[in-house]
Image (cartoon, rainbow, N blue to C red; front, side, top):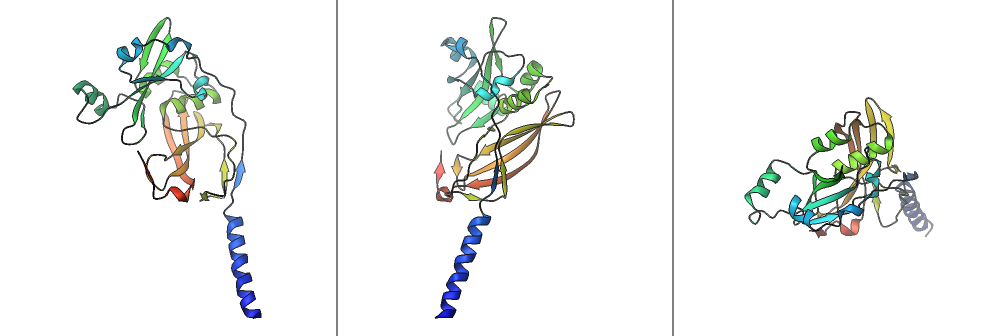
Length: 231
């Protein structure tokens, strides 16, 4: 009987220690106080003039861009075999910032209001010409988030429903780096089939506005969604 109790005690201790080891340390930071202006974009003609299916308000985290123009997302869709040849050429030539969503997701561009006119931004080159040089941590954060399908997360906390792959998880931050800034962001693999990982992504942006991914690693996931597909 004593041996049996000792065995169960050992199993319990291993389970307890495993649970303790799987809970990472969280390093939290206060988010920057950024805002964007979108009041000028209530014009239905913008949809037709710029090929948008929808005009959307961007994240407030884009509010660090300088010069500070009113800015909105121009979201458009393309379904192979159903779009125009012109739209197909746009997709093939990469005249958009990124694709987000599942099978029927959207392509992302931006519209700004500059000197009394609406201007369509199609690519990172357009972004670079308009906003470089990148001269502050806030602008670096906004610039990378405008260009890439990445998110800023603050106040991340432990969730017992998740499985964790790392010992330390740190909120979004920006630090000075060689010839620019290093921006710590996140990618949420929300669409497609599981497992649906949340990953951290470190991106370098130079003063000239050139963006380079430096590293990425998977952080955590909800194992209940491992066999689930989202389109």
